[in-house]
Picture 1 (cartoon, rainbow over the protein chains, first blue to last red):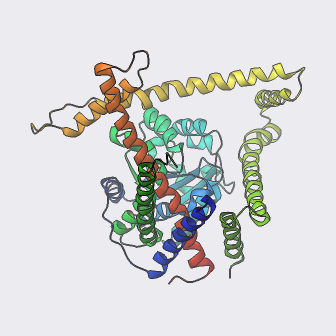
Picture 2: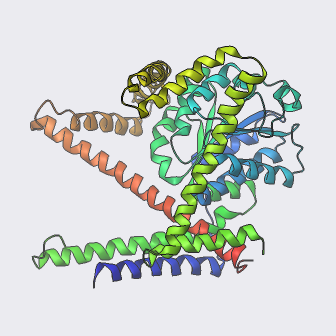
Picture 3: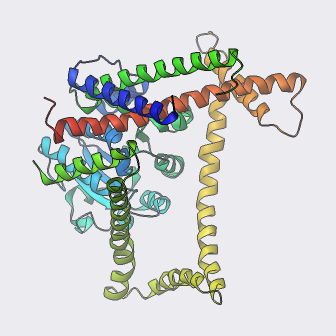
Length: 271
Length: 204
């Protein structure tokens, strides 16, 4: 069988597996991992009206994985009546972040300027993170819509990280690392993260050392959080498809190895 | 159907058409993505930096001192001519100097000192029990470092330690690869969720 045909069979089967898993509508039970449980418990125990900064540090390409995490974290923040300061240190995350924040805020009847605010995007993320340690107003003199920061009720009492209980970086790359290095290490700001699964091993050492307070990782993390929160969403919907696709890949790996050893015993080399 | 959803659905299908083979529809969608990303980023940079931080305060608030960064920024463009390209070294030197000054202490503290201190755990826990995970961390760190110690030949004890180090590295690579597969599948699943739900209305 030529490699093109093999590729075709693999892609088509994977697509069928994922689509069928969706259409069957099975519900999977996922148990919260310690990191997700820690994130949930932390937010659950924050005093009402505390200020939380949410930074949308991701590109549009990771949206399918990041969106379920953003949605459930924001829902939890608004249900707990916490106040949210949104921003983005990644150009593409700006409009997405604003849309997600507004959508969830409206679900909970929150008022812009009082319960939440979106500061927009700032390039040179290191300068922005360091600058906010001194003065958020200095880095963002205006919000996303050009309103003066001093005219926004929520922002009047917020000077710098001293007035923010936790920064949640929702990221698909190394922006969370910069939050840890510049806001965490220098200003002792607590950092939480919502990460794509591909980034989890990068941040594991920082979770172990406590520099990263906790993290919700990937679609699975979102599904676990949704269960803790008590509202099944995109995370849980995707878990059946993900499990089925993983089983399919494991089967492929096993078949590949069997063929490899069979070929090798015949003296076929590495093909 | 919402026009935005229709466009998004058709563009998703256009991108996935590459799985069949390279085709003009795929290339058009790809070019659109690149163009839109760059255009969007440029507008954001103009709005949030050039306009808000430079031109507006310079022209409306008489921030005359802002001519310094403006000149430094313009000096970057001197790279376009061979004769004046040396001028660009000044803003580059400033950027590297300031960048290194901010980054080195922060990275040294967060990536090295804090991480090293987190590796040094007592092997005996407060309740008198033996902390097996601390032992694994110690063995992992020492053997992985032994693998990357290239100034001595990997023979004898050093060789055995380096060998164990490779197993730790392989476990790390395996975990990373597994998570990456999971991540890429999540992206596919997200798009299928969109196509079946919002686009085709096949999901309840």
